[in-house]
Length: 292
Image 1: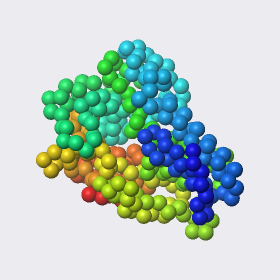
Image 2: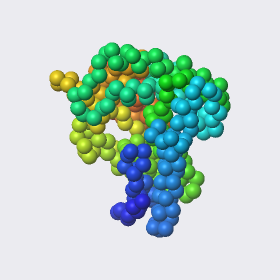
Image 3: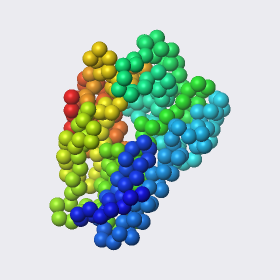
Image 4: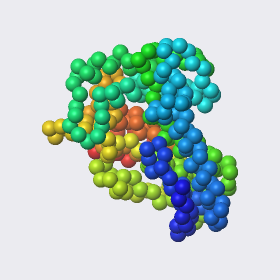
């Protein structure tokens, strides 16, 4: 954890969930800033340890290796699974936490390695939330299927950390995990943090500059994760009903919401709409920025 004084606030930096993480706190004393930043890092690492699909010592691993037997989960995991169920319903099946198995054939590394339609079709029997037996607090994952909470985890972590810090200190805080962020406690003066949203395809750019007082921003896009063959760009957003990328989607969708989880969900759902992203967002009545 690196904590440094900026012009009018303290900045804590660390890496978690494969993302650069930043905590901005508007307090005077370094000791207080450091305690808040360390608490934020500890909570982020707790969530990463618990829900990462890359570990073999957590609840996700237990679910995915349950051999078709029911596994009892704690309340926090159950709440996330309830949310995943609602996401599947409201998206018409476009948002599906069982679609992680598609990573077996899709590696969005900027190369031209496009799998065949036959390979994609072969994985479809292993995708589909309705095949999961969810009877809180017990969940049964059929053999060969997987639950992947990665599409929810980072935004959930942002909200958890923001709430934790708000409970610990009466101070303005901005939590930024890989460009998904939330501000709590309005700052004095203009009351806003200055934030930038990366332009698709331009690493480390802040093409969209915004003032954020209280609330959350989340962005979904293909700036870093895509495939390219014969001039055709394949974004990393996959349609779980076809096992194929959603074509004609925007390069980037940024949504303003009350929570990062809400903003992240709407940004992802907009990308999943493809060419209809703008009309979907208009129907939701949320402030948004779409880049094509």
